[in-house]
Length: 32
Image 1 (cartoon, one colour):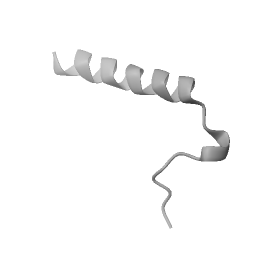
Image 2: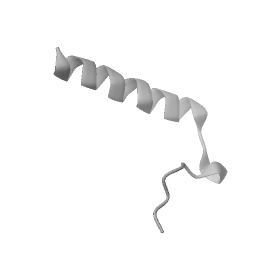
Image 3: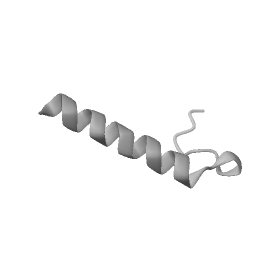
Image 4: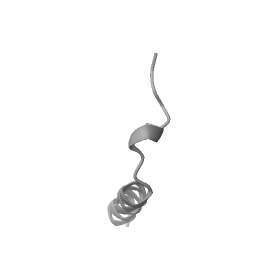
């Protein structure tokens, strides 16, 4: 069984948002 959704018990919205923003920035840099 693969867990796709993040663990709700250990969910950190600020950290998740930062990681998502960091990935988007990294992709933007790689694409351009």
